[in-house]
Image (cartoon, rainbow, N blue to C red; front, top):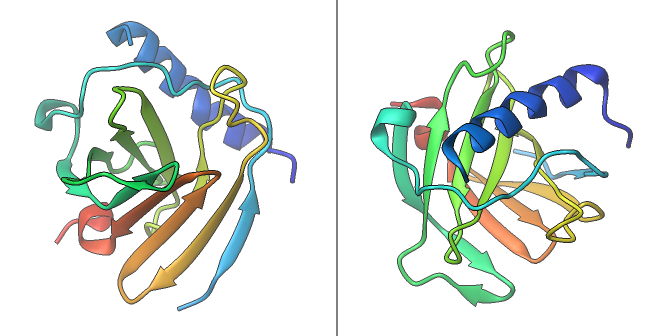
Length: 148
């Protein structure tokens, strides 16, 4: 799948933000090369996001004992989509982008961390979006993504 210009433009503000701080049904959506990065950044804080929470995450087959900290910025795009910034145990971040109704649509990727060729698979389990992106696994509850 090739990214549209709109999808590419969604990723560009994330790069700027990272640079500025220094740091239901089953669907499959392959994620191709992207100019974005999962660069090292400060952990999610309440001031930067509409909500923060610890979410279930598994990195390279290892369950992260207390989960990964995540922050959601709702209404991040003009069409109401959101951006979830997930801080992994090594301090790097992965961004998951959602549409206006909270469905994950894509993940940022980078040649630097070799994620540019990874495939993103999204599965719905009850009221949770389960995201497998290469060797990374995240669970995003609707209540976190949408509020409530």
